[in-house]
Structures are given as structure tokens and as C-alpha cells.
Length: 107
Image (cartoon, rainbow, N blue to C red):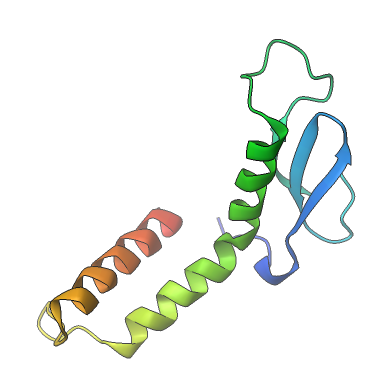
């Protein structure tokens, strides 16, 4: 895997009544879908997730590349020295959460 689709161009698409999708340019629902929530037919085979929750999930996914970049920038502000950082306990806690989020995104 070489990485993810360029994130500053991710977009939430609500073109179909039963699907909310995160798409990349040229923002066509077919072929450029990064992730979708719902079903094309609104059938009973999909879990019942309300449209509002689908849209909230899509917005979070669309923001993921920006959130990853913010975490990476934060980590760069406080480099590790011998496996530790020098900061207040609150900053250390945030730093650890950012480091864990980066690891989750990178597998």
C-alpha cells in the first residue's frame, strides 16, 4: 500500500437517497468512492443507521487526513528523547493519544 487518497480533496456526497459517501475528485459517486454508509436500495439487509448518523460518520472520515496531519504536527513539536518527552502531564497524555492515533492510521 502506498498511502491514502489525497485527503484535502475528500468530500461528503449525498447524491442518492440511501447512501452517504466520502468521495475524491471528480466527486462521482461511482468509481471515486473512498467509503460509503447505507445501501443503494435502502434494503433491510443493511444495519439501520439513521441518515444523520451516516452523514456524521462521513464527515468524520472526510476529516481523517486533516486530523492525521494535525497529530503528526503535534508529535513533531515534542520530539522523543530516550523514549520520553519533556512536557506537562496533560501534554504528555495528548501526545500519547496522538501517537496512538497515528499508529492506528498507519496500521
